[in-house]
Structure formats: C-alpha cells, structure tokens
Figure 1: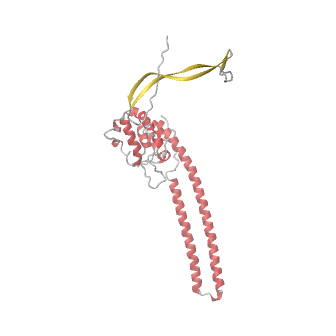
Figure 2: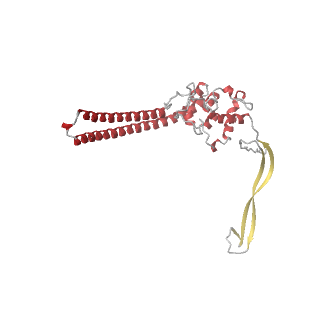
Figure 3: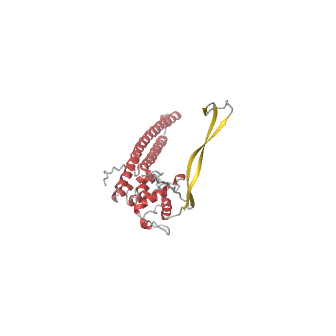
Length: 310
C-alpha cells in the first residue's frame, strides 16, 4: 500500500491585521556542466583528461498558494488591556470589570484561554521595549503598593502558560513576592484555587528568588554594620583629638591658676556640645542604615510551602 504523506506548516503570529499570501515552493538543485579547454584551470573532477566545472544552483518552483488575513479578535484586545494594566494598580481588582466593547473576560472560554493568551503575549513584541510585569515598580520602592498583579490573575484562572511567559519578563521576581491587598501571594492563591501544577511552579520560583534575596540581604546587613563601626571609631577618635586640643589650647594660653570659673564652664560646654553633635550624627546614621535594611528586607521573608499534590 502506498504511504500517505501529509504536509504540515506553521503560520507565525503577529499583532498586525493584514492580508498575507502563503506560497508552497518546491526546491531542487540543478547542475550545469561547463567544459574547459585550458589545462591550467583547477579541476573539479577529471574524466579522460578533460577538465569539467560543475555549477550547482537552487531552483524554486511554486506549487500552490493561498491568501488569508490576520484579524483582531477578543484575545488581541484582552492582551492589550492586560499589558497596559501593569501601569494601573487597580486595573485587576475585579475580574468582572475586565471588559470593554471589544472583549469580556467573563465570556472567554477558559479551557482555551491559556493557549490563546500566551500566544498573543508572545506576539505582542514586549521583548523590544521596556515592558515590566509591575510597570517598572520595585517592591523596595516606598510607593509600591500591594496589588493584584498579572501573576495573581494567572493564579485565579489557572493560566499556566501565561504565567510561564510572565516569569521570563522583567519584574517577575518582585511580582512573585508582592501580595495583593488581602495579603495573598500568587503561588498561595493558585494552590487555594486548586491549580497545583501552577502553584508548584510559582512556589519554586518564589523560593529561589527569596533565597537569593536573603543572601543579598545578609551581606548588606554585614556591610552596614561594618560601616557603622568604622564611622563610630572615626568619630570618637576625632572627638578625643578635638577635646585634647581644646584643653591644650586653654592651658597654654592661660595658666590654670588664672583660669576663671566661667572659662572652665565655657570649655566644658564646648566639649559637651561637640559630644552631643557626635551622638546626634551617629544616631542619624544608624536610623538611615536601619531604614535601608528594613526597605531591603521588606517582604523578603522566605516562605517555605508544603509539598503540593494534585
């Protein structure tokens, strides 16, 4: 029996509505033999003393063609909304409000949404710009508020492929550690909704990133402590030198027998003021370093989740 053969092809997606012509082409090699009389020419192969050059060229013969059209559908418009939602902290608060006259999330077929949306995201040319999962915010920024992120959306709807794509984009590390306004992290929300494979993937990334952050934070704390010690030692050394100079200058200028009580008082007052200023400086430095450490370690607690099983 003859073997049935089928031709399969993939049409690349993109985000422009336009007409496209697809042409099937047969490609084959064609040889041309040219006889050369001169013997000094380099031989390609020699047959009975004759020198022959062989030229191989590729030929293409159109077999058939068809025309089709890229069109904007509801998935395209939903993708546009989601990619722009990262710049609005409240855009994803209510899933029922994710709709317009061109798309409605509540009417989407969830069984195919993951595949359609992940493809649309990969064709949205997000890699060529500065697109960020949190819109450019960092959880270390003071203005970065707890919010529903795209990873929370994936966790609510079970969008595994979409989440896998988002984890490749800038800002995903912070998005994994950013809770929503109910204090829920994406991986915990996925487990709560029964999407255990998704929860396991998000949990793995969450632990990995927090482990690296914890190492970075520990190194930062050690560095801050060393800075405090060095600054404190320098300030106290300077203080002792300054006080010695004040006493020496006072004693040299006037013998101790002729120093009045008011002059002693002024000298001691100057020393106390100097010490007070040093203490205030050290306190301000300590407060600044403490605030920095708090900012760095904010939401950086490693959360070890229990093994997730389906």
